[in-house]
Amino acid sequence: MPPLPRVACPGRRQPKTLGRGYKAVSNSNPKRILIVGAGEAGRTLAQALERQHGSQCLVVGFVDDHPEAANGSRDKVLGGRQDLLTLVDKHQVDEVIVADAPSWQERLVESLCSNGHRNLTVRVVPSMYEAMIGRPAFASVDDVPMLGLTVPTPPRAYVVAKRIFDVACSALALVVTSPVLALSALAIKLTSRGPVLYKQNRVGLNGVTFQMLKLRTMVADAERQTGPVLSCGKGDGRVTPVGRLLRKLRLDELPQFVNVLRGEMSVIGPRPERPCFVQDYEQKVPAYKQRHRIRPGITGLAQVNGYYQSSFDIKLRYDLMYIFNQSVMLDLKILLLTAKAIFCSGGS
Image 1 (cartoon, rainbow, N blue to C red):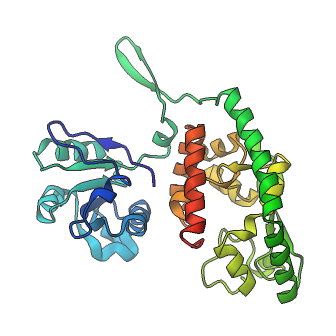
Image 2: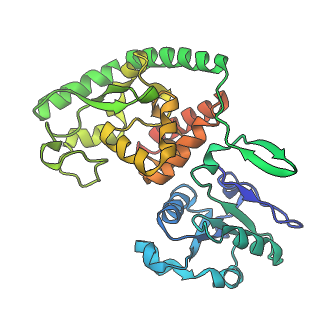
């Protein structure tokens, strides 16, 4: 997961950034983290920290004025905002991450940075719109400062280079993986009824609908009784045994390189969603429309940081961060993290 915005507290030594800094911490003395906000964002963050940096950090608990909203994390809610400073001392906290406290975030950060706590790092999970201003434009009118939510346009050279890479990478991938595709198709055909390929309408660039290709991993007509389902769980009985293996290794997504060659998708970008879900999301979060400014991708910033299991809110923040901060270096980083997730983690 990428570094969160850090608030520098004057006069204090600042530890290394989140993610990279944990490697320097001894396993016997992990970094102690307190998360403000025990809602969905806070719980997702805690799970990500434990999954990616379990031996280098320890989430001591949550601070939340409404522990009833914590669900499974309720037992780890240590107190409310009035207890924050006391909890930092009591649990020898090294880092406070503000995941969800919009109404009192400013006072909280100011309080933490002004009370002389030892080498304390404070980080803030960006809101939906803060994620969109990685390169903000500053201006002023009569000494009144303003922050511009400008929509950056990627350089033409970057757009052309990315398309060339997409075509070359997809053609090579289809050639190299053709034996795997053939064996997968044979296994699907021999073990279950129905077509080998599964075609599903997804929303792409500029809101245009296209048919995304996948190797079929479920029984035929899986949604006839359930209707549209956002994602299936690990115990979903509709997934075939062969399909479960294909999903684990991400092999079911190999046909999407054909979508890339057609110009409907890119190798890197936000994952495309179904029209019925897009319509619902756009009504709830207007910023969701920004996802359609670029081609959807096979992998993306949200996927390499959430292993395809993050909540809608977290995924959208990552998608917006990518869209508004596209670069060759960011694309290379996502490719490396994708390869690591597949080959080093067994696709889990």
